[in-house]
Length: 600
Image (tube, rainbow, N blue to C red; front, side, top):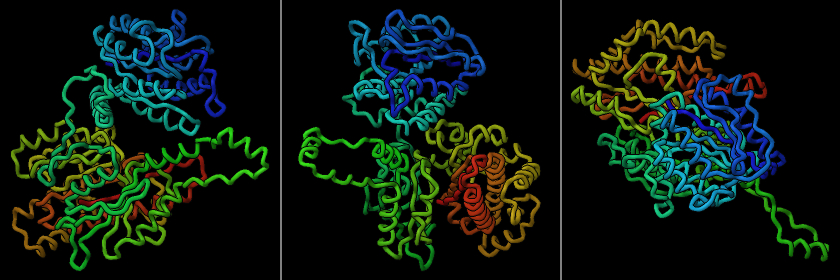
């Protein structure tokens, strides 16, 4: 199990302030907010100061949260002896373990190491020496007002080790920085999850860093494989999370089966792509074109917060000129707000083709609820949906392949599953689903018959349905009337489904596939909905139902069971919006995610 070495910078510069708050107090705030992640973990806790002046605040051992709270960061004073100090630490740490997380909270770079370790470039020989010692080190560094050259160095160090880096420049960034750090620290207790996410961060770092800027360290072994096959529906994709949102949107449309994509209009934070819908989405008498707009919500919010945090600057010569000429100070240029940008996008959508279908996709979930209202204003026919930053995982092999091949696909490690939980899966027990539940769920609706039997053997569908009814009774959505989930009852009538099969003139083997479709999706929807209600709307926020070519040829998107599923989630979506609106301003209430459904 990984161990943690935690270091707090206590050099004299930590007295300096960020928006009125000293850096040392910010460091203490961060520690108070994340210390519970080290509850029950082996950790050594120290300060970083002048050579020979660093203090051990807590020797290497396991502690509970109460003991961790007793560790206090001392008053600042002195310099920053960093790179040589970390090498000396590594020589001690290797005696107990070779797998370490180095958590560092600091406001500056090394100022006291000598020779090759001196200055910003000293990190290269430092990590090379740590590797020679035999330690696999993952660096997680939180900067407090770092200069750009130091920030660039720390970013490379964290990137090369698959770690995490952030730099707080204003008070508005503190909360988000702590949340991100806390999330990455949550991996310590799960070896598999940490390995997957660490490799995912390393791949993202490599994809976003010019090769000429990367040091040749080789800290994470193995090739960086970023190609992803989508089972023949589209060509292999080059990345699971393109940096540019326009590339991400085009790849998402290709995954959905759209063809003849064309980049159309764009704004500062949003992009439009026109495309032709896949054959199974075409409805008689309805335009087969779709206009799709994507917004990278995280970049939008980050850019706006940076703009608002920047103080107004005026050259000293201009200040003197205004003073002596007694000219009035010119009015400041009004910066665009998120509302201004969304109203611009609303206007662009109004001016788009009247016949084409329209969809708005947020990439990432970092946005306020009132964005929905702005974008929906006068655009009732536009669908708004929120997707994770990572593209959905590929579908399974065809339902009729050899079962061993199918099982290999289920067991494979897929980086897309960092932000998605996928059905079918290996384990259908509630505890495991709950622990792996993500903000987004993707359900491949038609699965291998042998896997369907294996899944059914793990689940008591009658018990699951009773659990769902209990969760509904305890939820705030039972008024004015309970949510209708009777169609999820495994003992409910299937007469309507039989009539649908007869109407579509299905063979006996096709009817078996349809029955399997109903069984599997009934089980899956029951479990997802139960967890959503029990977690009080924390997750998921999106469910995507994916129909393979066989499912589409059978017309399963028009099956009455799937119609009931969509109707159920639309009802729940509306009730969540009403509940969130009614409880707005009540500090004790929980904000539920508005669970959305998408199909492709």
